[in-house]
Image 1 (spheres, rainbow, N blue to C red):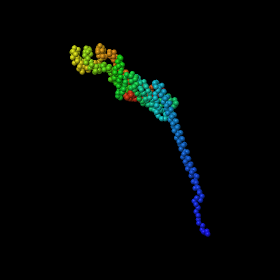
Image 2 (cartoon, helix red, strand yellow):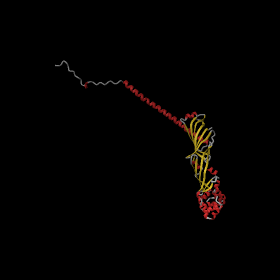
Image 3 (cartoon, rainbow, N blue to C red):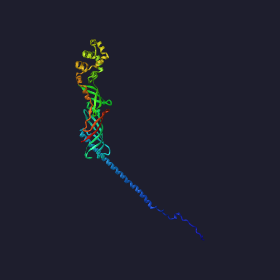
Image 4 (cartoon, rainbow, N blue to C red):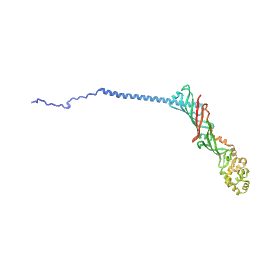
Length: 378
């Protein structure tokens, strides 16, 4: 018999039909996609803009530098022709950018370096000058005829290497010996003899455009026998060295030859009675010549005067008469002219060019130059 109240039954979970969850609103997904697409599509345009600007800047810079190189080359050729230089100078135009300066007719600065400039007897190894605030002359950037230079600063170098080649002929060398001094060492051929040369050159500014040199301490050594110092003072002339004077005092025959000349005896200050006794007795001669005072007196003798008055004594003293004759013509002015390093700056067609400082450095003589109101071109 059935129950009047049926027993409820629960369906099995796998018997319930599956329903998909509702999809999210499509408007939210589209909005997100639109936002992401907007961010990524804007970035390539910015990159393209930056790249284009960089390319344009690089192109303008390249064009500007090319124009500078061309202008420097043209300026170097023009300076070479107008200054009659053996080599084209090095021209460096300062300031950036260049093209606006050219259009405006003014250049910030121009540096010019000229090698091997002739200056009297010597050659300046390098002349370097920097001009500021140049005003270009011409009808436009493509027709520049010249420039006005209100101010210029630079320096010039007279190198010791060039001096050794040009003045020393590979026999005399120059080197720095202080701020204003140059030492000269080497050999000088005189009458077939190579004499050792020593001298000192003092360098100073001569006015506003010249360099003056004064030669001092000049001496020529004839081996170890004698030393020649050009001049007319008592300490100058041709004198025996201490070693050769002492050797003369030790050698009786040479000492008697000197004592046989009355004028030399008077120059030595030896009494006549002492001389006569020394000529007769070796003991008396040794007593006379052995005194230190006698050696000093012999060293005071000017051998040039001796050669003129008594040429027969030259052989006994070991001197070549031809050499002494050549030395008599090698006066102080002649030697000074051979060793002179002086020069003057060329006078510019317009404006002023001045020397402001002269000093001796390691590699030569350096001169500081200033100028104003200069002109290049017409």
